[in-house]
Image (cartoon, rainbow, N blue to C red):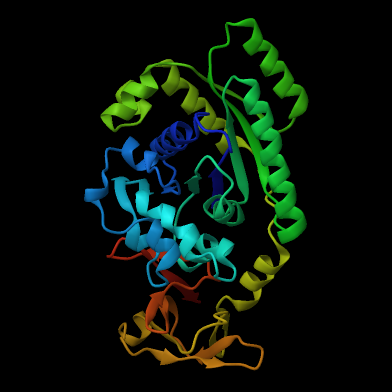
Amino acid sequence: MRVIALANQKGGCGKTTTATNLAATLSSMGKKVLLIDNDPQGHATLAFGFRERDFTLSTYDLYLTSDILIEDAFLDISSNLHLVPAGIELSAVEQTLARESEKEYRLRNNLRRSAMPYDYVLIDCPPSVSILTFNALLASSEILIPVDPSYYSLQAVKKMRETLSVLREKKGHDIIPHVLMSDFDTRPRFVRKLMAELDDLYEGELLDTVIHHTVRFKEAAGMGVPIIQHDPNSRGAHDFRGLARELSEQEVQVSVAALDHWVALLHGPQVSQAGVVFEADFPRAKTVRITGSFCSWSAKGLPLKCREDGIWECHLALEEGDHEYRFIVDGSWLPDPHNTETTANEFGGANSLVVVP
């Protein structure tokens, strides 16, 4: 799963246009895509025709309600595309979390608790470096920086690269950057000069695809549909198909934090002839239980014990076959954050899966 933030401190550079149309195009190619509207303006939500009256749960709840997960909050755009919507209430998150510890990890932690069988997660960010943007960046392994044809954009990209350097130095978090030329009319001389400067400054980061200027994008947004649906033969639709192919074909070497990698290796379900050992890292939990197909999805579940190192553990003698399960953490039913094997459930989410040979 690739998690990509779309961010730039400069407004009007095409972040939301890129986020919504890239999400729709990737999903049309058979990719399973989640788009998170992380901007209080809610433009990505509007771009798909939704208003605040059309939903009750949103990105706001992912930040501030511990028992609300992605699978509770998304809206179905198509069979391969889900949207977590946003409204003006999202602007209250920064003030609400002002005194909270680790407030910049709220979105990342929610993504880890959710069972998400997606190929791509795209996060549309506000045009500022705020707690919302930091949450998106710390949840992502890549960043897509749309740049419109102006010299203000060169400065904005420089500032964003400085922000990524701060995250690397202060948080130990590396993000792979991609720079995208967006809304470009390549005919004027100054635009061609700007393109050459971008190529010199960001060689290796600048994508080959150029999103050309066309009024079709505004028409599509006004109708609440992506460009590939509004005018599939337009220049804009062609550009986004090219962008989706370019991103899909890249061999992205994501630098995963060593801690995340080893936690996944050490604390996923361990199958042996003696049975299955389930381990889970829920450091703040008071009680952790497990339920699943092996106990008829008992609401009470089976208890895990907390070891001296803070890891919750239990050993179950399971019969051979596929076993679906979830943890019950302080009353909340959660998938196993350390197990990438999942299967869809009847509620639109996914259960964790362990196979006993």
